[in-house]
Length: 342
Ligand SMILES: Cc1cc2nc3c(=O)[nH]c(=O)nc-3n(C[C@H](O)[C@H](O)[C@H](O)COP(=O)(O)OP(=O)(O)OC[C@H]3O[C@@H](n4cnc5c(N)ncnc54)[C@H](O)[C@@H]3O)c2cc1C
Image 1: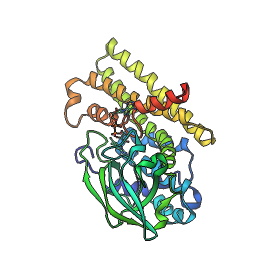
Image 2: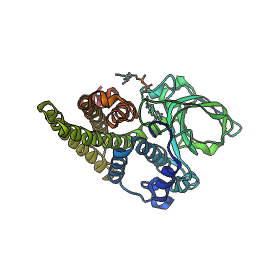
Image 3: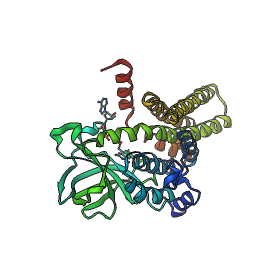
Image 4: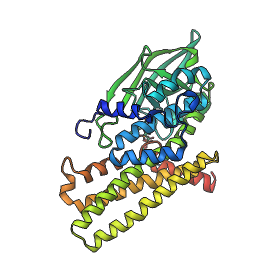
């Protein structure tokens, strides 16, 4: 997967067969309704082997199926969730644009009301799964002058006329998880493509991302765990004090990351506010993944930089996690504002 940057079909088929695509989807719509804590455990375990597979599933469940389950009408749930739970329809989440990422409220993809439906124009960048997705949750503004109140969320089926995938990006890490640019050229949507109500788009996006962060933190934890295993293996081959120190620090960090993720997931499962916990878990787990994978690279030496080296792949995979679903600086911003005030 790392070399070819493609997910083999049997992996997707296997995930579907084992019921992974419906793990957290409500039972009423064909899923297992598993709690966030179970999802985090599953994603961390999958990510120990493949961060790409874990990210593929995390996006489908946390930021595509979950918002449909939470904000969708019964008709929208009936139309999409059972197929998503079976793995027949893959979900994607389209918020980032070539000109807006961290400041999601500044997005420029426009929509207008026309003939009882909506027409979208613009583009989205770095969208996971979208090249193979059956349904993408897309955020667009009626008028940028309206600010956050102008943003709405739309359910965009892949076959929508005027909607296309322009390019698939050749990434440093999590290769095999596809990341694409999406284009909307007078893309026509029916009235019932609107998720929630007009103007509620940013609220839906931010709520989805808070939940998504726990899953992404778990994906980062899986990479950190795998990197720890590699670090320990390499250190044992020729033990020295500086290597023991790296292993000791990594051991504590990986356990702390796991504890933060479990705390955030449990709080979500109890229906309690968990914004600080989700940001803390995402911030710490993603940095832990980078730190532990860098330590494995330090011990591996030049062998870690050769194509096919496990330490090198984990380091490249790890580096993606401080970026996706809110960068490290954005987690600091969220936490700082909530803990200190604006
Ligand atoms: C592999 C991958 C998969 C992705 N999948 C998706 C997806 O499925 N859907 C989707 O919508 N997006 C996706 N993204 C996009 C990702 O969410 C954005 O890249 C991220 O939010 C950052 O936005 P940006 O790239 O525009 O960077 P910018 O917002 O331009 O940030 C650049 C740098 O500036 C810093 N910065 C920005 N604002 C501030 C501030 N106020 N204070 C301090 N520092 C700041 C950032 O932390 C960052 O270091 C993906 C990205 C990657 C790499």
